[in-house]
Image (cartoon, rainbow over all chains, first blue to last red):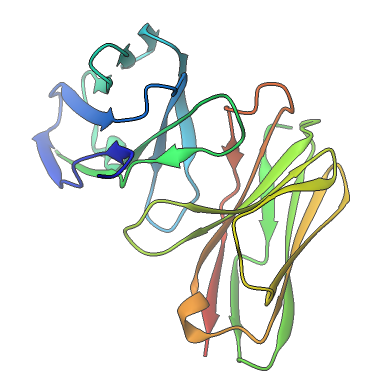
Length: 110
Length: 113
C-alpha cells in the first residue's frame, strides 16, 4: 500500500463547477499537508499549506484536513479553464522529506 | 524576490558528456532540494541541503553529484548519464524552520541520448 493515494483522473468538469480533489494516507504521523498545482512541463506551484486538521481558505480554493479519517481535500469553486492542470497533494511529518500523491489531472472545459 | 530560478531550461547530452544544472533563490531560504520527475509521475526526492550541508541523499547514483556553494545556489553535476535519466529535474527551497513549504523552480528538462 502506498503511503499517499490519489486518483490520477482525468477529472473533467465544465467551467463554473465546484471541483473536489482528494488524497488518503496511511501514516498517522503526517502533520503538514500541501497542495501543489503543476501545469504541463512546468514546476509545481504551492497552492495551499495546512498544519494538522481543519480548513483553510484562499480565494476560490479551500483545503480540508481530516486526520481522524486520514483524508485531505482541495475544493476549487467557480472553476476556470486556467485551472486545468495536475494537482499534487504532499505531506510530511515535519521533517524535510515530502511524500507526494501521484497527482490528479483536472480538465475544465469552457 | 519569491522565485526559484533554474538554468538551463532544456539540456540534451550524450552519455559521455559532463554537464551541470544550476538553481538559485534569493528568498533567504536555508534548505534546498533536488527532485527528479518522470512524465505523469510525482517528483522524487534526490538530495537535500540544509545550511549548505548535504543532509539527505536518497541513494542516488554517483553519476549525479550535488553541490551547494552558498546559501543561494545549488548545482547538480551530471556525468556518464544513462538514457533512463532523462526527466524533468526540479529544484526547490524552503526556510530552514518551516521546511514544509517548499517552493519549486520551473525545472530543467534533461534528455540523455
